[in-house]
Length: 184
Image (cartoon, rainbow, N blue to C red; front, side, top):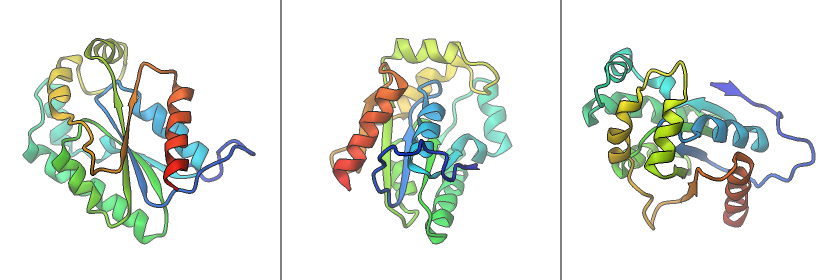
């Protein structure tokens, strides 16, 4: 959970952001990179949702066991509470979240601030390749199928954008910034 302050590039136009951006996707989709770049460009706080997992969840994933809805409930409540705290403090933030069902997104929308979702999506082959090349992460590549099964596409009534992770990181950021500008 880092405050980025005014780390954005001087002179770079930035759309006004009220509320929070949740960058979601499976492990290896580029959530951390995307969230960090967005936070820096927008001058927002950024957090990794993985940091909110109870140790039991980390142990379970490290053992290659998919999390259940019951496992995720306290994790989602902690993220929602963090977002609510940011809202209550008058701040907007960017946070990463792994695979998110619609029902999980509904929990995060209960954070009282406007919550917008950036869904990083790509082919299962690309995502598996990215997961296989990560180091030092507790989630093994074997959990990719369970993550893909959990990640549900954004629906028409949700405030969100789906982005293909095959694009270059800067192109992803540009598309998100253009979307935010159009929605301002």
